Image (cartoon, rainbow, N blue to C red; front, side):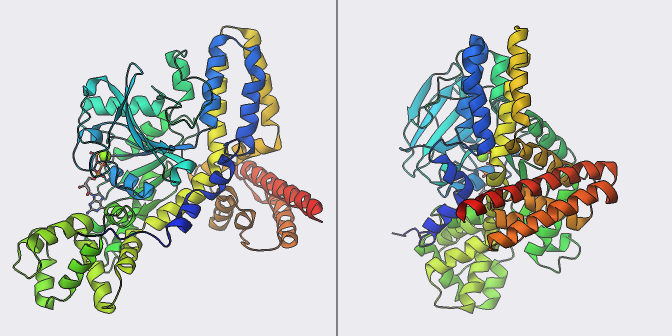
Length: 552
Ligand SMILES: Nc1nc2c(ncn2[C@@H]2O[C@H](COP(=O)(O)OP(=O)(O)OP(=O)(O)O)[C@@H](O)[C@H]2O)c(=O)[nH]1
Ligand SMILES: [Mg+2]
């Protein structure tokens, strides 16, 4: 029997870094993403006794969402490799790829203390399903698809403590029913069977909410957008339609990340300047797509989801490593011929059984096989574990993870709070009681004047700059991105590891610089952004000084 090659010994470390450090730290106790989310939650709790039943039910829903991890939807065209990437990110092959009913349903993966799969019907009723024998969501759900809203999967995987991952059927898919289900879920047409995993515990579900309120309070908060090399002109539209449907009205580069998946299938010669290198070609293509997709996303990262999934979810076994060793031992001419195409690879006569080759192809495709064979030839005694690492490195997944971590984790507080505030505003606006309306609006005004609300303005500034709506010199853009995209103060100031005194001085210096830039060096639009950046540095300085005096 072939053994899966464990991701350890680095697995625990990964869980810690990928577990969205900033998020997991704060998800322990009140499980809120940060100070602004806490303020919004406080607002809801304070006002709740003073508003009508309908608004109160809406507030409960907002509270429930604030207390849950960032909802990240994986979206993209049909068969772009969304489920494969979801499996890679979760570190478990649980989402069916290629076939099965589930590829036509929205599936939400969230943290739970016990692994379980639950079908949620449109009438709100749920049904627990067994995992299939290989640990996946069953291919056939055994229920009438028309009656299904979506599937909830609770898993004990640590990364889900930091974010909930929503796998979606392809946008723009020909199947109208799946497209509708996706749109409904992403726009918040449902909110699921809450508390089923025993981990929410804040108020009831949304039974008492009417359609408008439900739409206002639910929905995905961030997007991992999956494209392949064939980005069509209307992909931009698909993304725009998607972001319009997310709960955050300001959806854009702040809460959307894009990957160019199946980077292994890019033909190097099809891209000028790639010099025959697949990864280089994919990177160049990704850069071009970033231009095409702007202002919706900041950039596009190349990735090979298939390799990422094989490396991270146990698909790559010690038996695979042995088969690859056999392949590496073949004569060059044989190997080169076989590597010409998948068909030849399996049909060619050689000592490695055809079935074994087919399995390698399925797990690694030709690109991964090539990378492994090269690695074995360079270092014949390479271990199966090290070979798995080669596969992971070739996948580009670490870059995607680190982006998810810096971008989404650092911004989760602002993203969640903005979505919550939008919901609270919408709930108040649709109230028939003018007193209630102005009470809620006044409370929001007060909240927006608090220092922690400044990050909302910073997210807006980021959107303006990253989308190109406000042009900035490259170095200033980079600085704004840095100070607005990291959770760690040292990283934000571009001085990781520096001491408090140095950081304090630097924050003050940059605050002063941005203020004079706002007054003297900038266009009016740049000036508005510069004021926001100035205040960001000022707040960092204040915070550093505060913690300095406490410490000393
Ligand atoms: N060569 C290659 N194949 C991939 C890669 N990622 C996914 N695939 C394959 O592409 C096919 C579709 O992958 P899925 O993950 O099911 O794609 P999906 O976007 O979830 O598909 P739908 O849910 O049906 O829209 C599967 O056969 C995967 O093995 C990749 O990076 N490289
Ligand atoms: Mg899928």
